[in-house]
Length: 410
Ligand SMILES: [Zn+2]
Image (cartoon, rainbow, N blue to C red; front, side, top):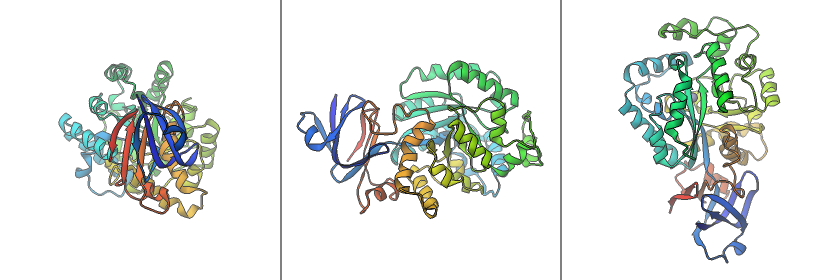
């Protein structure tokens, strides 16, 4: 029931770096953090990580496990709407349960092998992935994705998913209206009503492309001229020249401190004020933005913001699902901004920041008493131990524990 973990360094976003300290785990929780000499007199099982740096498990706050199979079929595209159009076509023709289940397994494997202990999974196939996620042992915020195509009876379907999850303490259900351009305004209002009634928080893709901005302002755009021509029901969306995607959502009454927004790489100054004022949670997927030839988010703003998380997005808009590669990409693109303690900021975004975005920060994201024991360690191979976390693609992971259970120890 009790285990002591010894590591050369322990890092957490709350306490910073500790040397010669140990952690006492009781069942699935962190019970005590103390100096090595004070804990090691206790006669419990000891895990000696030696030359390693131990930290909270990584949180990949935005991923579509089911989209791995799309990767091989996609043709190079230079525009967001062209990419989206290809995905709509591929999903129509090739979505098969076996293919999708295989995708989910591969994605989980890639995700887990680089130190991720929690995922924010966006799921659109009525719970096909739940048994695979349960088996993986990963912690999961499970976002049920809604678009116009599956919006009929979405309330009933979400409640069916809840049954499938069956009060598993590792999986929490949430609502994910896909975007502002894929749902009728009236469906967005229904989502809001449903999530309030059932106390399920909302997350959505927002301000991801230049076309989305034109769309919500009622300007000529490729959603109307290209994407909607492929759909049975083109979404009926209220637009205004003064809207930004975020101002549109604000008008629907969706904007509150429980709202999480993914991407946000096309923002006005007014949007930034709305984010700060309402304490919104923001997940960045920078490699996905560049993959789709869109601009990067305002990194200076988000690196200094209190509730920023990081995600790989799906393999349909990234080269791999290695979360450490996402961290190093964020680091390299932020270096010139001269942000103080940048490496630690990236680590915070990847742990407690992600936990906040998934509404799990009371349980995970830092090493504090009574939090769940989701921990990983990296063998130190560089002079600066943070370099051994951010720049080695996760190949030097020496230990992994989720919910008090050891998943890796070498
Ligand atoms: Zn996404």
